[in-house]
Structure formats: structure tokens, C-alpha cells
Image (cartoon, rainbow, N blue to C red):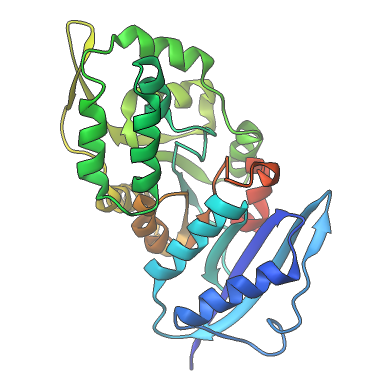
Length: 294
């Protein structure tokens, strides 16, 4: 018997046409709609935010292709979507990406603007998040461009760094449900730990890449390994091991090509972008709660 799956999508003013696009993507990844659920799906709207469930059957699912397509919809159209088994349990742990997820910006880009090379960095970051560049090589190159930047610039950025709307409420809601949470980012541990401190008890763990510092300035190198796409999937596995749960009991949230392996490893993967190209459709993080826990 084939497994049953669900894609739950949410967006501001979600349309039937957009759910059809998701259905076509799912078909291309080895799934086929369940009748009559998928054929009859109509988005329900609450306070301007629509939500729709699409049910599928299928065995060999191309998860990487599916998450790649869902991430593109999140970044370009502001549609957040979660893929899971048809009747998922409430996750016991959730791993969140940092840039463009818990914070609505790309932090390396902001550092680059302060170093006078912002436009160049933005182009590299965009290509990396679309999967056009190898994440590890691109990250090392982008970090090298920041060589000589005073650490004080990072301190200044932390003080002005915005959180994605609804971040505190979302993490508090997950905690009330007994769910452990972590930030899992390829970016600097300095920022990951700063976000943990700002959110208080909202985040239990952090996994990130350490920047090398000498004489109060960035050297342009990393201290240790870069947390690339495989590293992020391994970090989620470590979170599950520490909490004594199976991967099927975990969820992951991310927005870039380097998040695909992590999303695919989780029992419930959520494609989300805090500041999509369609900025008018940006969703607060609280809009993900129906994707994560219902």
C-alpha cells in the first residue's frame, strides 16, 4: 500500500491557482493526488492568510526536488509549505534556519554593506541560496571578503538586528507544547548565540559556523568546519539524538538550497522565507504554527 502524504500551504490571499502549482510540483516529484481531497481543495482564509491541505499518495518521493520547488515558491511568492505524512504527530523538536527565517535579513550581506561591498555580496548570496553555487565554497569566499572587518561591527549589527515578526510568540507556543527548538545556521555562531540570548529560553540549542578573529578583526577565515547542507542535516540528527527522538518526530524550517537536506531529513519540513521577493506577502513566523503543530 502506498504511503499517504500531505502538503499544507499558507500565504496571504492564497489562491486555488497557487495550490494547483503545488500539485503540479508534487506530481513531478513522484506523488499523485488522492481523490477527492486534492481535487476539491479550496484555501480557507483567516485574517487575510489562506491555508490549504493537499493530500497525495506515492512511494518513491524525490524529496530534494520537492523541497527545492517549495523553497522557490517561498522565496519568490511568499508561500510557506510543509511536507509530511498525511497525519503527522506534533513534533518534539524543531530546527530553525537563521537568515531569512528567524531574522528577515541575510546577516553576511549586512556586514558586507558596512564593509562597502554590499551589492557584490548580495549577488553571491542570492546565487548561493538558489543553489547555483556550492554553499561551502561560496561561504568561504564571502567570508574572505570580510577580512579586516572590526568585531565591533558585528556587535553593532547585533544591537540593531531585527527578528522576524512573531518569532518570540512562535517559540513560546512550541515550548508550551513541550517542543525543543534549535537554531541551525551555516552563518556565524556569534549571531546564532546572540539570537538565542535575545529570545531567552525560546531556543534550546544552536549549531553554526565559527568565524576566526585575530586582533579584534575578522581574518576572513572560519575557525573549524563550515556548517554546510550536510552539516545542517547532521545538526538536526544531533538535536534528535540529544532529545532521544527519531527524525520522524522532528521538524525543520528553512529557506535556501543549503536547507534542503535538513528539511528532507525531518519528519516535517517547512519551506519558509521571511522576506520573499513578493514582499507584500511576507508572513509572520506565527503563520507557521498551523504547519508545524496542527
